Picture (spheres, rainbow over the protein chains, first blue to last red):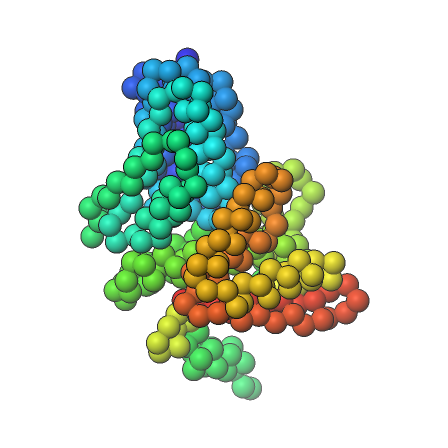
Amino acid sequence: MKNLKIDETKYTPEMTFDPETLVIAIKGKSYPENTEEFYKPAFEWLEKNLSDLGKKGLTVNLELIYFNSSSSKALMNFFDMLEESVDNGDNITVNWMYEEDNESILEYGEEFLEDIETLPFNLVPLKSRE
Amino acid sequence: MKDKIFVIKKNLNEKGVFLYFSGPISQDFLVEIGHTLRQKMELEKVSRSIIVKVFSVFIEHSQNIINFSAEQCNSDIEGSPTAGIGVIVVGFDGDNYFVSCGNTIHNSDVDIFNDILSRIKDMGKEKLKEYYKEELKKEVSKKSDGPGLSLIEVARKSGRPIEYKLTRIDEKHTFLTVKTVV
């Protein structure tokens, strides 16, 4: 299984999907012009590899500082996919990380959590940069 | 000769406007101007949550102009950047920051915008949240990108009901203006 690494740009996050460490990390800002196109490689990778990784125990670390409304659709799709895996008996944990003074990100985390039923989803505060 | 640009600048400054743009808006444009906007507010020691809100409204409005402006400026070459023509304004009225945008839309899209904007105009925080979730699920399932989610997002970042105006230009076009006070 190959890992997937996409570098950060000014408006898209760094994405590291590592089958060795069993960690998926997404970090940065997300407001691409075409969200679907940007996240396509990530979803294709997941479709291929998620069930294998889920069986071994996968951790998903999300550390977003800003995302636009169309990126929230991609996140919703992502969580639906993870939850389906969990419902099939896989072991996946999501850590939604937010800087303490970034209320918006905390609120979005809480809202996703409200709609999630079986996927383990933790809200993790981080010390602010300033 | 009267210096027209000076007069325009003076008028805008009197209304608290510190950023005004009218013309083609592209992804590159909004990334760079958005960055400058953040920097300016950080230098002025504006709170993080206000900066995030103003930035978010600025990005949603700008991307809506790219996606829904009836006046487009793009080439036929696949993958080349697209730009929508519109107006974007950011200012501070002494108490609050505001972001306004304006662009031409097709008359066939007027109902879509009017329906969403008239609904969100009178919604409180909780109602907007429910509507956002509802629209998010709808858009995820149908895989289409309407302006709905984006406009609800803008309204959620607004401290006051959003104001909007639809001004008919001719039998094909209408001008849409949305004002958000953060």
